[in-house]
Image (cartoon, rainbow, N blue to C red; front, side, top):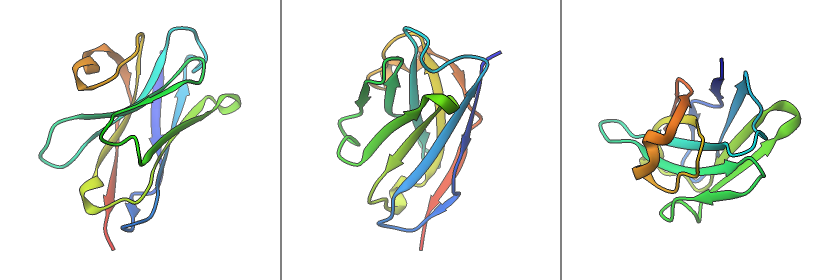
Length: 126
C-alpha cells in the first residue's frame, strides 16, 4: 500500500519561504513512469496544482507559481520537497502531495492522481 505523508511548519511569516516534505512509503519515487506532485487548496477555494517531480528527477511547474516554487527530492529517504518563496497570506492553504502514473501539467489532470497524502494546513501570517 502506497502512503504519502506531508510534514512541515504549520505557520510561516510573510516574505519567508514555505518548505514542506512528502515522505513516501510502499513504493519508490524513482519507479519509472511515476510523477510526484504538490497541490494546494486555499480556504473556501478549489484545488490548485503546483508542480511535479518525475521519476527521473525532472520538474514541471504551474506557470502562475513557477517563479516562486521549487521541487526537489532525496531519493535515499524516498522524500520530495516543496519550497515556495516570498509567501503572502494568499498562500495560506492545505497542501497535499500526490502521485500520478502520467505527467500532470495543470488542474485538468488532477483525476490522474491515484494516491494522496492527508494534507497539511500552512498558514501565512505575521
